[in-house]
Image 1: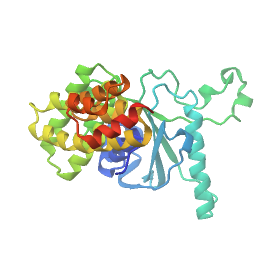
Image 2: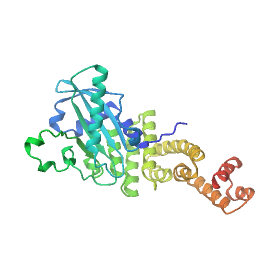
Image 3: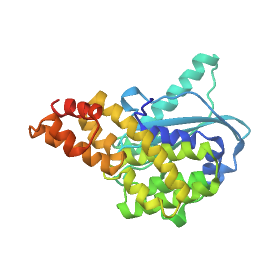
Image 4: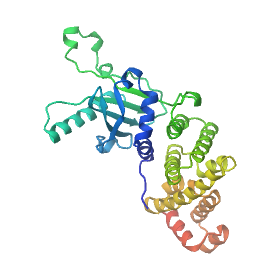
Length: 326
């Protein structure tokens, strides 16, 4: 089974990699003056990515080709999903844009560059404290004489942090609203996050998009559990099942898939991951039995005694016993 190593990246790319949802986002969140210059019907997603491997746990990017002021241009969407923001984000974005330009020059043997509009979507616990231009991180630039300042490169990026948004402030279609709502609530208290998840499940049920809705939900659940150590499948299922019966059924199906995947991860990477991630998305009862078995083995109880105590099957208990002494 494929293991998704970066649920943040997966969730961002599933939502913003959909042309209709991106068009919806741009329609609702671009400055009006810029929106009037962009032909939203001309959006075409590109395959390139420019995030260095060492930063892929903290950044994701998507590039769209689009007509800007009647000519080919590009929108560069950067998703910064780190608990605290990079103080050099303006430099990072510039590096990615220059890499993109450099690739075009080399591939197309051109001497002209297309316009690129950068958009940064920030998703972290810390409140963003930076200005949205390159000049703001150049030391002492405010004191430079104008004849010198004109030689210093500068640009601005569009910035979005949805964490302060209330439900009433979030605009767009259902898929976009769910995405932004989850981003907004993910670091808030458990009650508010569960309420947001429940509303999202109801909205997905009303969409009735079949497999697409199931895939969307699975990616969302993976993301939530990865982002919140204190949130389990059981919490979500208990909150949703009475409000959205169909959503509750979908969660049960997804939970079984994730539980099996979690056990696989636990076997491959050790019980630390299995206990923290794999087991917490399984049934609460099964998790309690597993932890009880681990504790019993570590206390020196023999195999038959632990099997009688927990009621777990022999094959599963053998795996737990092996992990208990690693």
